[in-house]
Image 1 (cartoon, rainbow, N blue to C red):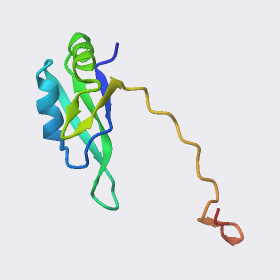
Image 2 (cartoon, rainbow, N blue to C red):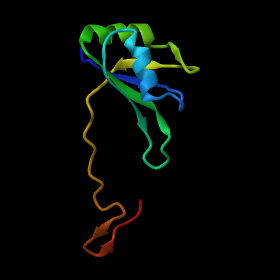
Image 3 (cartoon, rainbow, N blue to C red):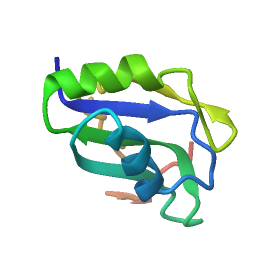
Length: 103
């Protein structure tokens, strides 16, 4: 089992320090991050927590999945590896003839 956890269905007011506090009850937290939208600066409603070892991560999943944090029931599970995204090709940029097609 990995030490990195996905935490979803977060209230937009939950901060990284709130996550660290909640998960700290289940073991040592290496890092806690709530992802923010780069355009609006608002939370995306999910984040990642890295626990110091796999047993702490497993304990946090069983203790916090479905539990309420700031009025919303969290979804906590093992984070999956990031998938490679396909390149955008000529979607909106320059190509040999000038501007690319807008999709």
